[in-house]
Length: 72
Image (cartoon, rainbow, N blue to C red; front, side, top):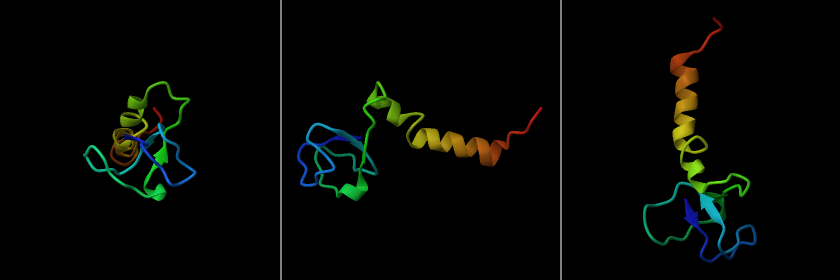
């Protein structure tokens, strides 16, 4: 997750929060295709690190592919 500091793409504005496969560093330049705007309707940006992020996807597919839930 990152905050947009400056953008040359009209799809992203300064101050918006984004997520994507980003590097673990203080500043970086990414193309608009590498970023997804974080939904402002979700109260906490940290929610995107859990159930809505990679951890959530891992749990979801692990449940379906490994757990194979069935009725009863």
